[in-house]
Structures are given as structure tokens and as C-alpha cells.
Image (cartoon, rainbow, N blue to C red; front, side, top):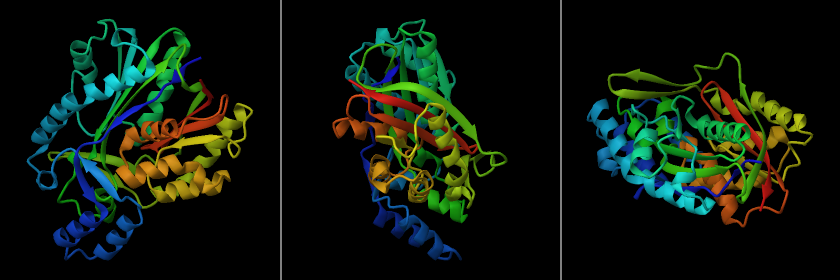
Length: 348
């Protein structure tokens, strides 16, 4: 049975607080006709601080897409290896024991993928499979867990390494003045996470079932417009209400497994914003406290895209984990609108 082990997580050293974010919005967009609305939306995110890969003065400058992407590549190569080393150590395996690397990112582009660089630089075997995931946004953390589960189900003795590297601050577009974009400037943060899924052995969530669900006709609700200046994030005002159509999908996967989605022992949920978590609590019929790990990630780091689910899982480990055979759900939500969901039991 495939088990996802303790994730390793790292955030950059540069910090911007909620107060600084609001002050910058007032300074940079003093004449914006909807500034008051944008400020209220940012305040309502509950994000106290975010970590960014460059100092704020560099983040606010836009030197062009080529230069931005060069920063992405250099910082990924500088920061990712140490996170991987910690994840391997926590899972008690070596780089040579990894059979597939699933690398997730939607905030920069490399070809060959970062997976090729990692194999060449970190001692992974030359026959290690590579699965880069670039276009699932925040849902990709859940998708990576599911693809690792699938791989280890097909090859029961295999080990999968998941790496999520998101530098959302490199997507800042100073000329985009829509309210949704101003909100995203105060919501998203940067972070790196890695975790091993072991085909046999390991302590963590023993994965039992996974599923995907796409809400019909919502593909333009969360998207990128790719322009000469890079990735321009598009956020529809209907996105906060997506838990109403997605909650039934979460109930269905639990029901197919003979579980009640409202009666699980732990929940590892992508924290897109407080409204997402509040609505999911309502529609699943679970106490708000059930999403404490996701809320902590949102408060301390902001929305770190695909890395959220691994950071929330890391917080469950930090709390001491769960009791043997405790039941739980992991879910990531993102463009599509897509949900990537999995169920498992805590295994020591």
C-alpha cells in the first residue's frame, strides 16, 4: 500500500506582511476606482504574511518575461535540492531508491524539465521516470499525490518523489488593475515542498483511493493569459463559490469507499482562501477546526499554490500525526475548475 511520508517545506527569506501589502496597494493604486473593495478583499484573506523569493523592491519591478523566468530557474536550482534531501531523509530512502520524480510548478517554465536537472545533479538513477505537471495550478499538488499513488499501485515496490516549486511573486504584473488581480497580489506566496510516496513501508497516509472531478464550463474561471510580459493571472469573481458544486464530488469519493465525508479524522485541503474553507465546512458538515492545518498555511504563508497540500500535511505530522488507521481526505482545487482528491488511513 502506497504511503505518503512526511513532507519537507521551505519558504524564501523575504517577508511581506498584510500591513505592508495594504500600504503598497494604497501607494501604487491610489486613484483606482475600486481600491476600497480590493483592500477589503485582501484584508479578508486572513493572510498575515507571505514569503517571496526576491526583495519586495525587485518583485515590484518587471524586467520582462525572459528575466523573470531566468530568476525562476536559478532560484529553483538553488533552493529545491535541500528540500528534496530533507524529504528523502524523512522517508528513510536514498535518491537511488526513487523510481519516478513528479515535479509540479505553474509559475515558471523549463525544458528540459527540472526533473532532468535533478537526476543529473542529485544522484538519482538515469532510468528514473519523469512526470512534469505544469498546467493544473493549485490542483497540481493533489494531482501529484494521485499520480504517485497510481504509479506505486502499478509498481508496488516503487518509490515516488513529489516536488512542488511555486514562486507566485514572479507572476506579479504591475499593469494589471482588475480587482481579481489586485486580490491575488495580496493572497499568493512562494514556497517549495517535497514528499516521498513509498510503495512499501513508511509512516504517514496510506493511500487507498483517488479521483478527479471537473466542474463543467468553468475553464475560464481561473486561468493564465500568456503575453509578452509573461503569465497574467485571471480570477473570476465566481471562484469563491466553487465549493457548492465541488463538495458533492468529495462526498461521492468517500461514499464509493464506504466512508462518510463528514466523519473523517483529518482533512488536508488546499487553502485557496478563507471562503473556500468556510464553505467546505458548511457543505460537508464538518467543524471549521477540521481545516486548521490549511488555515495555518494560509495565515502564515498565503496561498502557495500546489505546495499548500504538502504544507498542510506537514502540519499534521508536526501535531504528532493521527492515531493508527485514522481516516482522512486530501484534496487540491485549481483551474478547470478541477478537484484532485484522495482518501487514506494513517499508518505507522
